[in-house]
Image (cartoon, rainbow, N blue to C red):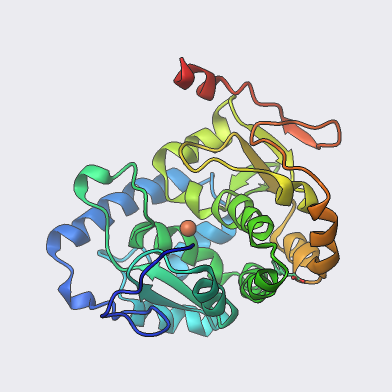
Length: 284
Ligand code: PHE
Ligand code: FE
């Protein structure tokens, strides 16, 4: 992220106090509405690890979670913590926090007229969407290593490639589980519409996860995804990434072209070939 300016009230590492006591009753009520709707929706749709962590972390208690309380539970499980930031932060700051097992979360919550869509991640997306899997040891490991890998990718000029991996796993990842496909990506899990679309709609492609392929694939930021990649397990994802040296992979990728968001290649493991009907109808 270029051109972000650190507000004067933020620390050098961009963190701010959550000031939990300052949330209004109406802000807590917005969290409760979103939580109600999404936690019901995700039963049987999200990965078991995600659903179980909601209970273990007591995210089901009313109101916007107090990070200090949440961090006691999360820290005891995987050593991770959540820290508040004003909004999007520069890549380097983001990677540095992840590498130290700190997940940066927006402090603010969306307005009541933005329940279904907003542009900047708020506390519901960041905490409900991202924090449950930080309680899973393999996934937590992946996130920390991703932060270290990000710092490395900066010097190898490969941030754009690595960012695609984050996008198609941490934000929009699907996983094979229980004889079907489940959600684990935070961008899906925190969205009412996309948590149906990603699993049930005929439009998007659902392809087996392939690390190099993913890092070549462009993505949409203005609509639901046209392609989702399905991992076999968090342990498998961890093994393929944390334990790999990406430097030679970036070199190979530099000589390969981008893949369009809707493309299906002969080499893909196709679990579902999308009709792409959604985009066609939106383009009229
Ligand atoms: N192991 C990768 C590297 O050598 C970094 C990485 C770890 C990337 C975990 C993604 C996830 O740069
Ligand atoms: Fe996110």
